[in-house]
Length: 451
Image (cartoon, rainbow, N blue to C red; front, side, top):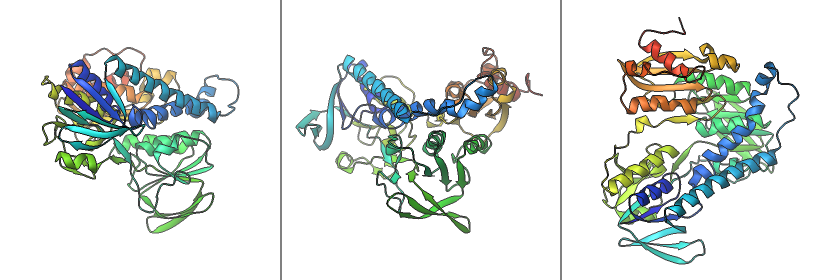
């Protein structure tokens, strides 16, 4: 079977490998480089920068535990080189895997169709034609824009430019307090930038548990980040070297002068009409319509990743890629359960959540009562479980290693394990993961480490 995949991000390249494993003849078309936004401009470089600035943020804590010496600062050129190396290593690893699975890669852009033949031009502007039996669209996403804040790549930038870090601005206004906004705020504040973050909603990370978000809010403020919620940018005037900004704060207006503005209001599906319209599948600016099996109304077309607008996360895209391939090759598979897709914020401390976190009965256990956290000098952080009877329906963790530990809750919910079953699992001591067990013991009414 001939499978063509358009888009080589975490959805597209995973789908390509899985389809090859199932016996398909695979062609992957990618106009840029494999890895997509995640590897080249998002997940990977962001985490490289966050790891690089972590010692700056945690320096005082380590001093209190006996670390001698003074903090000399960060060599931004070396930090940028580290981030670039992480991109190269990730990208070359993906290319190697694709080659090992005999997947044909076309670096170019699909432009049109002729029946079940895809037409396009490669990076050398040479025309190509590829026939398919089944087509997987993984076109990804682009940064969302705000009227009056048009990107210029210099004074007003998107998340795509934010990680280039050719210079570190003296002052930075971040418009948007979502995942991208708070991660970028952490990086720039650690590098010495005076950061102001504006969010229209009443809290940063809208939609996440307010109690846990408040812990992160306070930690961001300790970094010197000025956070303005319930506010919006009203007017921007650009000069040769800065932006004068009016911010509406309730009934009053405040002004500020910023070296740069980072618009971090999220991303939107890359709805490429010339590729979608001929396929006769429904789409809108919010994405392409598909079901829980990634199928569209066209039986030969599947949609995965950010393009469907369901859960714009790299790991969601990868899972969708596997589901799509299973359906194509008539393999048994579970449908997508988007409520089980974990959501992670890689700030310091991290915040991660999964499932329903605004319903059910909550049980909270603090990091300050965890032995490993005490040994590490950590007092901030908590886990919050949400239950319905004897079932776990959601979880939020704010604290050390939250992004790694959220998988425990994801497994519990996806396998439909009861609270009593989960409580019988032995957790190694001392570990941060024990907060999960302690919260479970609270939920079943038999807490050990809290009164």
